[in-house]
Image (tube, rainbow, N blue to C red; front, side, top):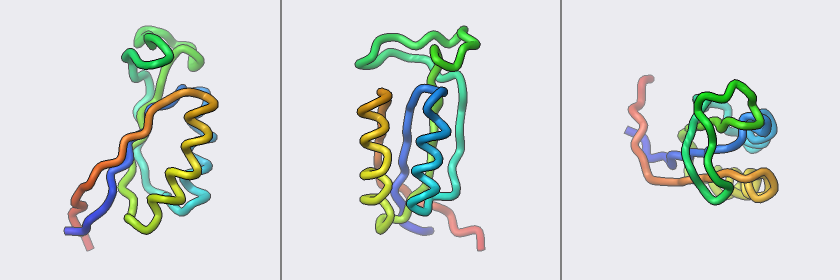
Length: 98
């Protein structure tokens, strides 16, 4: 198993391409996206039944090597401050499939 950082980001679906572009710029090229995430946070409630991207959130999950974490956090923090969102980082173990 490989020690990694699990990065979970919730952002408005309209902003997801910008967030992913920044992730890829710092070398994170593997991630999963789930659209239509609903909940309640600092910016109020998101509606799960909405089909309008400006009203819904997306969830991004990525496994990040520890040495890339600082660059990733520096890249996405200004976006989340400007657009709203959440970023969680935790320790994880990735199963080595090679």
